[in-house]
Length: 168
Image 1 (spheres, rainbow, N blue to C red):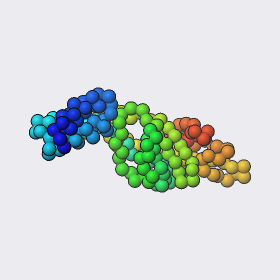
Image 2: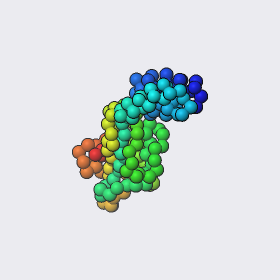
Image 3: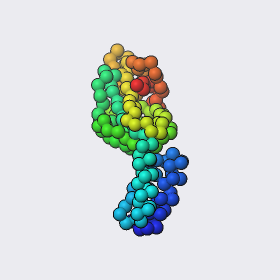
Image 4: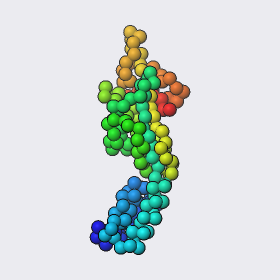
């Protein structure tokens, strides 16, 4: 890293942190802790990096089908950016604030929700339940069919497809 890049990262990180952009602040601080940076800059950046890491929230994403079984092959996007295509139970760092979550099963069923993540919240579980829906013959089908049956829990939200889903 050049000394100029080190100093710029040192100047930029506090502004990003105050704006709630902790992921970007963490990235900037990783730049100024490099061996090529002046010692005083590395020391300040290292201290601030610890503070940002402590404040940076994380979520653990989960999803279940209507029978309560874990869904593993699921595309998950946060604020329009694909985060994963397969759930693995790992924590995902996220900036504090409001975020739009989108969950998409392989069969095309989609659930969306908005969440609020608090600064410093670690490993917060964020999970949805894809409910079964009744068809005309009494059988069940995936969310997105024409007739929707309510979810098995009390909290119901509307998806973009008009079907109810539960957030646990």
